[in-house]
Length: 250
Image (cartoon, rainbow, N blue to C red; front, side, top):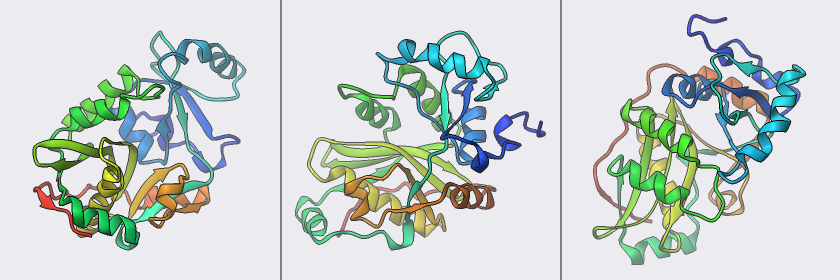
């Protein structure tokens, strides 16, 4: 076991036989930090499905097919995954499609970073089916308070119309979820985040899963081995991200 005491730090994540690389553990800041610096993140079932899916997950752990993290408490096991392929956006070359540029120009939205993390994560979870369980909200909010999780807010005046949240680990930002109440506001949040990240030499926005609306913004797929190696090589002290309110321009 490594000096940090985390299985993720000694696990050969890229060589695991499935995307599900571990089970259990806690959604505390220490475990979340260890996961992200090794290309892993938690992906529980939706609130209504956690207990139903717990039994087959426990069978995998009992058979030794998936490692069980030390210190696992009672309750549904947390699945920890490292997808293949991995979807990423290069922050310096994020594309802003013409239609989005025009929308941004008309909307005159303003953006902030870390102005209202709790509102953003709650808005991301406010949908019919979500993996953002109360345990996830508590864990990421605690990580935010320690400076590891961040939110982008998109404002129309004083009204929050979109945003996203994620984790900065070294010089990799992993986007977790986003929301909008005005069409295009979540894409605008991605544009603003990439610009802020590029300013402080954070080259990778990890978007985890492929999606059509991010593909047009420059999302590409990379091999899990390549992503995990890059994530580990970009560890170290995370830069301070610019937080000031900005007028978003296309």
